[in-house]
Image 1 (spheres, rainbow, N blue to C red):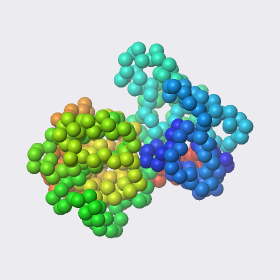
Image 2 (cartoon, rainbow, N blue to C red; image 1 turned 90 degrees about the vertical axis):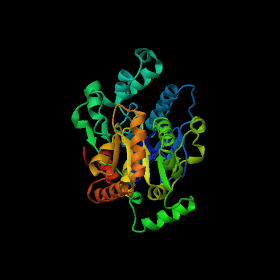
Image 3 (cartoon, rainbow, N blue to C red; image 1 turned 45 degrees about the horizontal axis):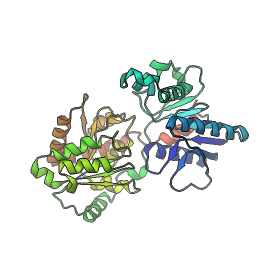
Image 4 (spheres, rainbow, N blue to C red; image 1 turned 135 degrees about the horizontal axis):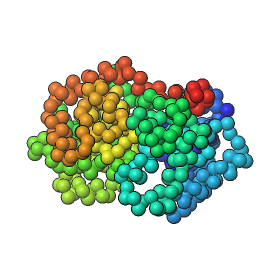
Length: 373
């Protein structure tokens, strides 16, 4: 079959983008042709992929999206395909990968009522309705159990169109046999001795991921503990407002912000704790990547995959409603307790051996190719 994958932006370090790539490669490995429509492509193009970058520009994102949709549909009319798979909500999809939470629910619960009078709201509401309305035929790949009831509540989407996928953690995130050697080399490279504590925060979109919360928590550590602790942040975003916050808090020498990179497994093995105090997160793949690497996790309970951390007993959850002093206290307690971190690490590795945390690309391809619809 000829498959068309559609997403607004591809770059190698985004969670949605990595999921797209692994699903597309799985479909290609099964003998199907892959065509990609996008507005931005950063990074290498896999062998055999046809990547089309739309020559579309607009002042506002919603206007750009509408122009992009029209451009894609015009090309599909000239060169039809067997399936259209979208990784952003838009009309005309046969299959939608639900990486984003319910827009309508957020608009009604988190926004001022005046927001729903704006063109931006009308655009995103219309594009979401095109996927989830009862009249649509789009099959929906769900990666978060907590979001499905919200879509049903607002749109009455038939249950048979939802397909809940297991997580899809890449095999290279699992702790290898020589994990200790990799950890030692990493810590020497970054100038960390045995007493030093390394906290990592990994993920693009620093504001949504709660980097401001992380910086305040580092600043609030007891003096002796703070002197032993470093925070390394990795992701694609503008660091300027956070660099200013670091300076204001007096922790600039304790924190490094790095751009997205391909050697994340080394950081997971070399660190002592993953900190992820996100404001909202549909899933949070990095939580499971830390789990299978044996890295304890401190995460807000609003993240879709946070329940795995609780089930595996490999870290702690920050309860809702969020309070900064709770995060501050939990971070200090986890960093001060070497025995607890060793127990959480062992629990994560044991859970990784028996839970299905890896088969998402295969199950997604089953649905896309009509083998599980």
